[in-house]
Length: 336
Image (cartoon, rainbow, N blue to C red; front, side):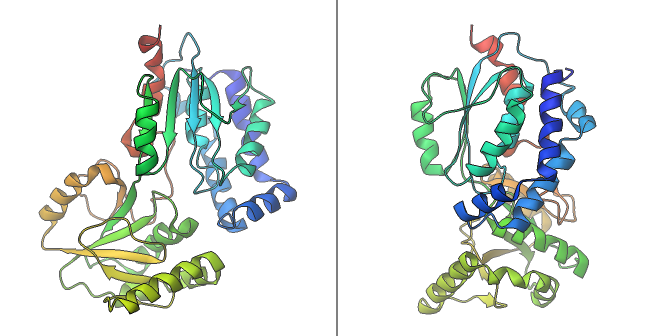
């Protein structure tokens, strides 16, 4: 489909606004959520500026059709990263539906700014809501616990409900220092708070971590952020008190864990594998817990990216591998 003019104008306005975010907005966002430091807001803004390119939007939307009868779609947004709810919002608008946004308490300032900018151009303005009472469909992002509540509460209307996911990397032991440094951005971008951040690496048996620690040294300033440092100190104390074995470079702890993909903040889990086929089989088993996999080798995993690329999703890289636009396009057939 061809995007509607008001949608393209709203995207253009947002792209321009993200290039010059007013200082009071930045200050409010940082004060409201200390994880939203200026570097992270800028990183997310720059990514969205590139994504909102008209050619990218056209390429993304080409395979889809627009709903003939607009539906009210509620979006329950996450707030772990700046602008993290923006993709769902764009999907609802592009599909010709009306957006009802339940903003996360962690990201109200930035998202309200984006919505105000886009509403100046939209034929059907975005509505911010406190409760989801009259939606025809819902897209909800939250924890595993909140997902259970969403699944019950919204069981009678079409929905996409996302649970906790994380990302992993598979190393061969032959990565260059440059490749390992790139992977550092997958670990440390946004302090590791996103589902596309690497929280666990799979390494061959006998893997030597010296080169890995040397390569990620440029990210050491992350420990100067007080909230990250608090997590680092707390987790280190827990491991020391429990006589746990771990590796440490004074800003990241690396610990073997064969049971979980989700490591605590400031900790990177690792697990060894005997051969590539075994790790391919394991990734298939863990598919529903993984957002994406980073590696330099082909693992035949549907959501694989290169090292250093986990935080560079395209518009068509849907969360959890669920095509949000296809879901929204289907509402005309589901809801009469």
